[in-house]
Image (tube, rainbow, N blue to C red; front, side):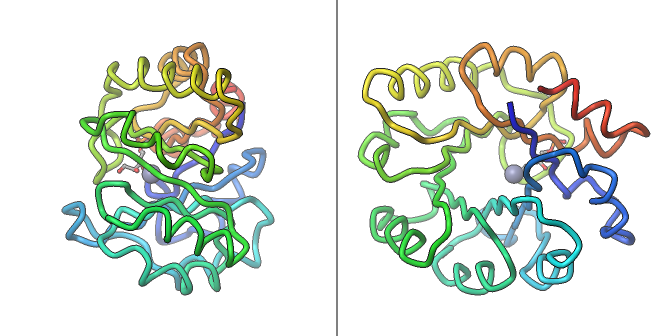
Length: 210
Ligand code: DX5
Ligand code: ZN
């Protein structure tokens, strides 16, 4: 099990020190919001560029934005290793996944809680990451939606049946209890914001998610 602390819940006035407190995590999850696809506005590429020299952790970039293609290059240049965009935000998914691969980064698709899991079917072969939202995207600190569990299970079964190699990542309301249930359903990576960053002993919390 890999863990991806979401820096959305970190103290933005001291981000460099904050990421040093979660150094045992394999990935850092970066929530990019544009005020259109979701109501909130958050992090741009300049923040990634500033953090990049201070860690070798994978930058797992979650674009909750309209027209994600427009920002592929700035985020790649800023040091993103993974770029995940929302299926609901675009109509040329294949082309965008190909573009990310051509630019040398891992490509991911995310789905909101109400989007049928089967809408990912045409793209399963091309995906490095599937990010299953277990809350409505937009804000940290929300309650896990149990409906994510059968969705994770369905993606895990498809992967086993058809030999796909995508990682199943869960995002929203993750704590030690919901993480255990997601793991049992077949998830590979836990994104967690408030559970990790609102705690004093963050490394202990990361260990509890594995
Ligand atoms: C929500 C974001 C999440 C968020 C998770 O739109 O995609 O990554 O930071 O925060 P918690 O773990 O607090 O639910
Ligand atoms: Zn996220």
